[in-house]
Length: 221
Image (cartoon, rainbow, N blue to C red; front, side, top):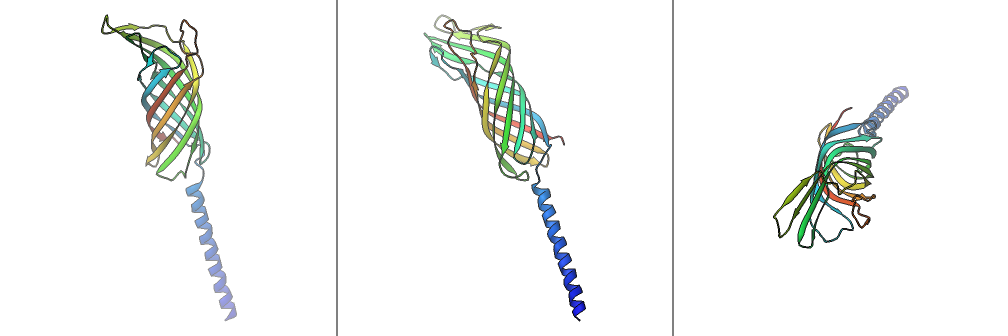
């Protein structure tokens, strides 16, 4: 009888140990870092851009961009990535009775370090990002209107410098639409560090931009 009880107790202990091991393994699988995950997809944004230290009253100047984004996860929380976009920026000012708008078109490449909150299995994950941003001017458009004429536009003007550099950062939410598809909604800012405008007084005129962006990223693992 004692042997039977010992054997039965042994089988129960083995079963309990095996069940606990399976539960632990399943937990590790659910919560393990998504190391190596590579997300790529289209991104687009819309916002307001302006340039610092300009004469006149600064007005709202719509800005926008579209391109492709990439995020590579290093572990469950940290990742890095960037974008390659065509970005319409610039400024609009009311000076001496005339409204002057200059719109440079940049090939912009922001690089970013990401921190994602929560677990990779969550349906919604907040994130923060920060990094440098580089811009190459491809074209420029100049528009002015005043009491003498309603509107005048010049293509390929040269008020802005060819290269631009600054810092981009922001916060957002990632919505898991499917197992390998995420919808990204981000509120971001750009602070230029270089003198963007070739003005006669030679003042320091950095670019600024605040935008709301939307992206659809697919896991290519």
